Amino acid sequence: QVQLVESGGGLVQPGGSLRLSCKVSGVSFSLYVVGWYRQAPGKGRELVAHITSGGGSTTYADSVKGRFTISRDNPKMTVYLQMNSLKPDDTAVYYCNKVVGGAPADFGSWGQGTQVTVSS
Image (tube, rainbow, N blue to C red; front, side, top):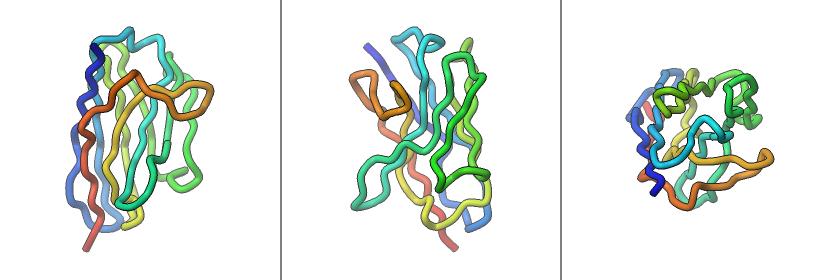
């Protein structure tokens, strides 16, 4: 059974930074492309960044390019999202999950997510 546990969210002022973590268990983590998704109130879930299985290649949505950095630690089965220069539009619940062919996918379940609120 796959478990995804996101953490690190919080309330931050515009221009601030946060580092999110997602611990994945129950799956051969190092075999998969994984990514960070977010869902803002009243909107659909958006894939914002993903990273290849070995960590050698990353891809970002235009909305976060240059501000967010995704990384992973395969022995720790954890994926991270460093978020800098945060904007109010980044306010959302953030989730991690699988990515297939550059498109949203999932391991069959989702974690509880971690809330990020950017506000003065």
